[in-house]
Length: 79
Figure 1 (spheres, one colour):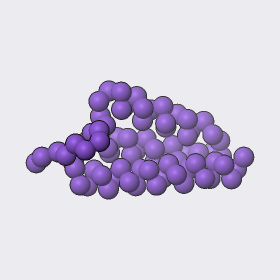
Figure 2: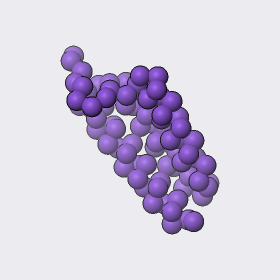
Figure 3: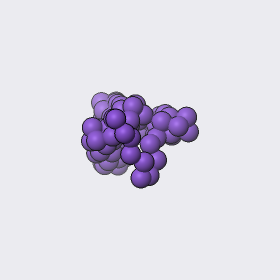
């Protein structure tokens, strides 16, 4: 079970880094919030060695997405 937690935590961390790169390009504030959810869940799951932080981070990120903080496919913010 530990290997599965490490694999999913690594994927969540990569997803958080990708969202931070997306924020750097588009300056959409929702990407920072979603990246912090995924990154925090990843770090907590490795520190506590439990699966529930990954589920909680995923649910929080989807709640943020339902609230409209996801830029969506193909949308580009203009400054």
